[in-house]
Every structure is written in structure tokens, then in C-alpha cells.
Length: 185
Image (tube, rainbow, N blue to C red; front, side, top):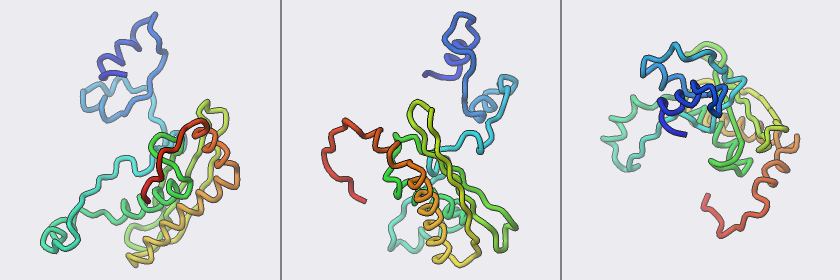
């Protein structure tokens, strides 16, 4: 823990606790320390948290003027990716503190029919078990239909993970925790 200076100082200390660190490259590059980066982890190796890096803007549904101003900021690909990823998380009944990772991407031409791919992982806390599933769906440019197709992709990957035993891993994480009340969905 700590800022980059603190972390790198611990790494550089020969008697320190670390022999390697995994950090966001953007932070090192921003500080002109790109020479400290020895390797980039591919998304296929290190999946990210659901909707990691996506930004959301809230607006009143009845505020047509503001909605129109915000329209150019909406990225259709990001919407579809987030819908797929969040459907996976919802189906697995996961949250921000469970070892669920995802990666989503598009294959094909940007302005035509293509495939939205989603890869998911559920891992045990000790890392001894990691279950992976990956599927894809064809998407085009029919907004409402595509949103449901993307969400169904997330549910399909989640069902595949559950069939492999992800439910047991996730149940183990909640064992011993007292449930105080049901969360609103």
C-alpha cells in the first residue's frame, strides 16, 4: 500500500518485502517512470473487475436538453461491454469484494456486424482454483436488441462458470458471514 514512491522504495530495498510489484502502467508513465515497467500483463492473463475503467454519467430522464448534450459522450461499445460484464456479475450474485474477473472485446469491423466476446473467471481466494469461461455473440447496430444480446452473453458465461463449480467457490467466500438484510436489485 502507499503511493508509487513508497511502493518502489520497498521494491528497491534488497531486504524489503517485495521482489516484484504489479502496478497500473498509466501511473508510472504519467510520472515519467516507464523505464521501471518490465512487463505488461495481457488481459488474457490478468482479467479486470467488472466495468473497470468505464465512466457513467447520470442525468434526469426528463431532461431532454441535457440528455442531448450528453449523447456524444455515450460510447456504444462500452455500453454493450458493461451490460455483458454486469449481467455476468449479477448472475453470479457477486460484488466488488469477490474474485470475479472479466475481459470483453469486439472482433470484426467497427461499423458492421461483429462479435462481442466475453471471458470470465472465478477464483478461490488462495488462487489454487480458477474457473474460466468464454463465449461470443454477433452484434450489429440495433440498440435495444443489442443491449439484450449483450446481457444474455454475460448470463451465458456466468451459467458456464456455475456449471464448472463457481457457485461452490463463491459460497465458500460468504461462509460465516451474517446476512443483515437483502440488497435491493
